[in-house]
Structures are given as C-alpha cells and as structure tokens.
Image 1 (cartoon, rainbow, N blue to C red):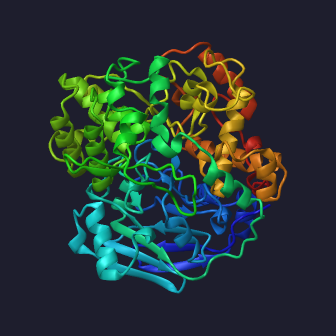
Image 2 (cartoon, one colour; image 1 turned 45 degrees about the vertical axis):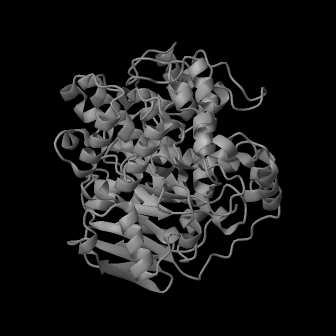
Length: 559
C-alpha cells in the first residue's frame, strides 16, 4: 500500500528542543495525512487535555500523493483537540505548502508544550530554528507573511501563520497557509496561539522517495481538459440549486430560501473573478480570486459556505459585501464559516440582518476580543443563551450551507460526524442534490437505509484526507483508480478510513462524547432509528466504540 515515509519530528516549544522518532509502522497502517495525524494524536495527547493548554499537540502531516504531479494533491492536514468542539479534530488546507512540507523529509511534525514568548518556528531538513517575533504581536496574516518573505526570505508558500484571532484564542481561529488558504474549521489557530506560535514554516531539499503510478497523468490530463462549472464558479455554483430546493439557510437558519440569492450566487462571483486560482500541481483550478474595481476589495472567494454564512444567513445580498467579510476573516485568521454564522446569530439577537457596517465591525471585535466580540469569540454553542437565539450547532460546531432539513442524509451526517456539523466529513450532500451520476444518486428525503452509504462515504473521505487527495476529485477518482494509485485493494483502503474514524470517535468517547452528542436542533424523518442503523454498521454501542472495535494494534497491545 502506498504510504508516507519519514520520521516524526517532535518540537517541544517550552524547552526549545526537538527529537525524531521512527513511525514506519504507523505510516504503513494509516498512509499519511489525517490517518497518521489521528493515530499519533490518539496515542500522544492525553484524553483530558485542555484544548488551549500545553498538553494539547498540533500534528502537521501530508501524504504520499504529495510526491506526485497529479491534480487534486495540493493539500495537507493538521490534527489536534479543538477548542470549539472539545473533541479530536483534523483540518485540511489547500494551497502550496504541502510539497514544501514534504521537502523537509519528515512524515509528520508535531508541536507540544508552549513558548514563553511569541515565536516563529522554522522547520528545515537540516534543523529547527526558534525565532522570537515580538514585533509581530497583533499582526494580520498579510503583515506576518510580508515579514517572513521580506526579512527572512521565506516564501509565502512555505508558511502557516495565525492572525490576531489566533493570538487572542478565538475558538474558531484558523491557521492560514499560502496567505489565503485555511486550516479552518474547529479553531486550531487558537491552539497555535495558545502555544505562542505566530508562524511555522517548512522547507528543505529532502523529498521522500515515493513511486507514484503513471496513472497520475491520466487524472491530471482529465482535470486540465474537462469543462467543469467549478472552474468558473467554485462551490458557490450550487447556490441556485440549493435555493430552488428550499435548502439555503437564511436569516440565522430561520428560513430556508433567500430572495437575494441572485446577488451572491455563482454568476455574481464569476463576474468578479479576474484570474484563475489553484493549489499546488492542480490543473483543475477551481479557486476564486475576485476583485471589485469600484471598491478596491480583493480576496479569494467567497465559496458557497461563506456566501451562505455572510450572505443569506446574515441577510446580505451583495457579493462585494460578502467578499469584504471574507477578506477580513482571511486577514484576521478566522474560519469564515463559523465567523459568519456567529455574526448572523448576533444580527438575529439585535434584529440587524443586512447591516454590513455592523457585520464588519463585529468581525473586527471578534478577532480582537473587544466588547461583544469577546462574547462571540466563544462560538455559538457557548453563547446562544446569552444572545437569546437557538443553538445551531452539533458538538459545538455550527452548520455548513448544505441544508440537512432538505437533504436528510446530510442531516444524519452532520449529527454523527466526529467533527460536528461539517459538510466535508462525508460530503453526503453530493449524492442527494445530486452532484453525481444517476447510478450514485439518492433521494434526499428520508434517512432509513442510508447508514451503510454514510459509513462508506466517511471512510472514503478519511482515505482522501490521508492520501492526501482533494475531495473535489470525486468525478475523476473511482475504485479502479484508487487501487492503481495506492497499490491496494479498495476495501483495504477503506479500512484505513474506518480505523481513522474509529480512533477519532474513541478519543472523543474518552472525553465524554456519546449518543447524546449525535443530535440535531431540528427534526428529520426516522432520525433515532437511522442513528441505530449507523451504530450497527459501525459496531458501536450508543455512539461509543467498544474495545472489540478498536484497531488491532490497540487490542493486541492490551493483551
């Protein structure tokens, strides 16, 4: 089975020390990326760790496909305990850093402990430098990357940085890479901030020796030549379909369609797109560099989730306003989905939907924890009572745009996902709109009989995150290609995903998560029965992983 090679580098921030460890057996069992990150975190982070305490670790990993020249492989993974959900969480970012990370020669890099001053950590194949950077306190993402490129000659594509939101430990702060791409959902930027790390950079000339099958170029060629709507409009292309299905969250989830959708939909974004945007080695080029000449606003995006959160969910029908909110989040280092939804909750409480000036002011206050921003920085789950609004979260994470009240399998997916209400955990929405061929599509109505398909998709997405392969490769990667590219039977590959999901769930069980956390703030058909079906398929008991279902290496270790 194709897998990562290279050792684990542990960076102790308190002692300014490093050590290396052979993790070949883990690489062989978990491939790389999210799988390896989850396995290491499960073993090395205490089950009772404070997400913002020194015992929490951040594990950066990439996968064997970053040794390829194939489209859909410009991504990497970061794993740790989330300050937003309080559970183990992996976040996935695109951009251009993954191959610079691979060039260090390490399979995984983990940060542990906490620095006593603000620092940048520079990881190279010939050593690690700890650089005090007190002058960067409060700096935006661009100000930080400008310093690294101008003063340290470190390319923006080698950087992972936090903005003021991370320093101020906003629970949905992002780690920003390649300046505009984010390890977004779950607040791992706050973990980096709690460790007093403003930036971590990667580089070297020691790439792993991984033999990638020639089939990579077939996939790359198809991605380059295919006429796909995402190349013009990104994910926001689905907005009109969602709105027509009465499945576009609006006005802080109180409505499911939006009269102003034409002002923030795919056509509106495409009008502002001024060049192609992509990730490392990817010819699919689905990113959205946008610019408004009249206002001077320039950003990358917004994608569908952000157009929902700062658009329809906030009562905003002007794409330029959404672009401005998106850019503020990128600069301050905020997950734009959670920031938008949290602002929408505040707008609902204040009866101020559509007030763009208040939105921008509130985003800034959140990033700096000033005034009401200090309250909102805790996230919807922790402050909804104080605001007097409903708690639109699962496991502390607020909802993505794909509406579970219409796409019932997606609703079930939100409930059981270890990350909370995140659409990318299983991408179940894709088979219910559908965005796939008829042979793969499902009726969006109802939940019964969908558990086995949901398990399959969760395992497949975990495999992609371990590879690491972008989830938008769905039209190009099939069973045969997975087997060819990874050199293993498809069922064995899915088993890697299953082990990863199981370890995430088991870690969270040790922190108190069980069936009561697999819930929704709304009703969908046969939900409790569908939960039972899902647990039966997984072999879990009321949402808890029994010892007999742990991966073999754990049961063998226990005798």
